[in-house]
Length: 148
Image (tube, rainbow, N blue to C red; front, side, top):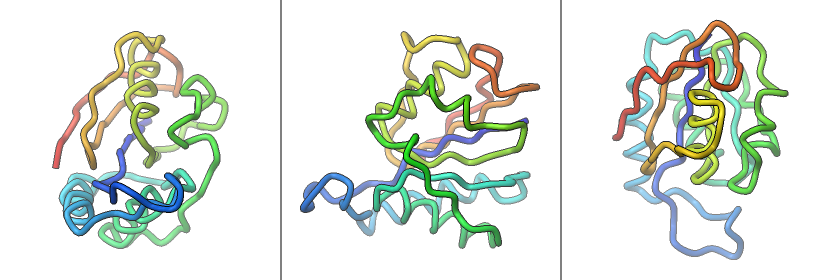
């Protein structure tokens, strides 16, 4: 199975709340460049944080891929979420997770190393690709990290 982890694109510096920050024009361009790396990949589901910038990122990817299923919005992909909780929600499907730093860096470390001590650096709209037989802590291999 494959797990792609995408950090949202560049977002506005301020909004009424952090959750309401929108992507900038530059952020939308970043996301579309990263989405290009997913063309032809076997993505079976797109799961995203409820924050506006992550929703906008997921929607841009969905449109770029011509992906028909709806985006699944979940509370366990917010910036404050615990990466250790993610494995409870994944099955053996190829999935794209759209979220935030520092969460995505910790999640990649957890999937790859089984701990959070080496978080992966992820700039805006960076796309990580992991692969493994099962979504288990420390048993997935990091194949690539692409920056837009």
